[in-house]
Amino acid sequence: MSDKRCCPTDKGVPDVEYAPAGVTYYMVGPVDSKKGVLIVGDIFGIDIDNSKRYLDKLAAEGFLVVFPDFFGKKAWPVNNWPPDFESESWKVFHTYITDIDHHMKVANQTAKMMRQLGVQKICSVGMCWGTGVALRLAKEKTVDGILTAHPSFFTPESLEGYSGPIGVLFSKDEPHQEEIRAALKNHPSKAVCETYDKLDHGFLAARYEYEEGNEEQKKQLDAAEKSSFDFLHEVLK
Image (cartoon, rainbow, N blue to C red; front, side, top):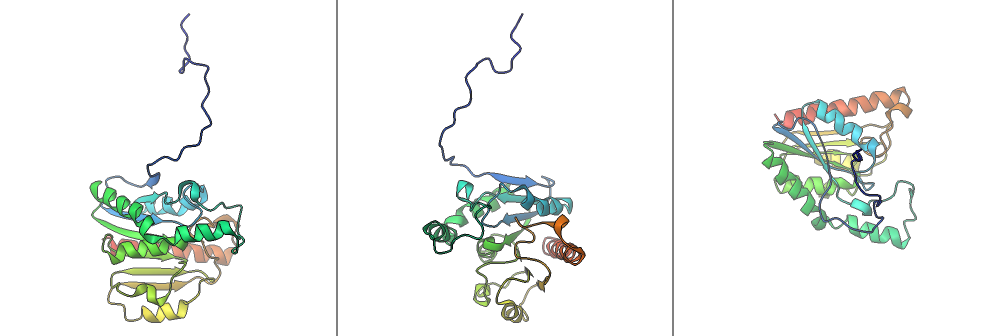
């Protein structure tokens, strides 16, 4: 009788330390779409399934959505929040995430890949930490616009030198909201700036918890998602 095992060996898989050189992506949506959304997520990385639910909704709107893994194993662990902001581990991580030049390499590579797939227009979506990278993509005209949800490290000065389409969806937690709203009042391109005062920072990213919200929170989350869809459809048409 022949051996019908798929793997003709008893040797198991080795448990080894190795840092792969490639970039992992979560990609969803029609691969022939001409409209692309490049996601720059939060500090918790790509391996949190909950953070992909909003991306799946974007895909249902007809966008090709690409979420690159900027951090790999360096992503901040979800079970260590809030961290000790005076700890050495947080200081090292903070230095790492604020090195925007380093992270732009993955961002630009992702945008180039999307163009090669046939995407004609791209909007970057920056969440929390990701706003800095997403905005720089837009400033350098690598993408055609930016949407940011619950932005971190975001001030009126962040907008200097940028005149393209921008959408800003604040939670109740971010600072500088009135100043940024004022700075966008005479913005030369499409500008949306909204605050969702029942939602916590991270409501479209790793902290997405629709089922746990009360009716007011669910209503605001629905509204924020709808606003983002409308913005992206307008910018990418």
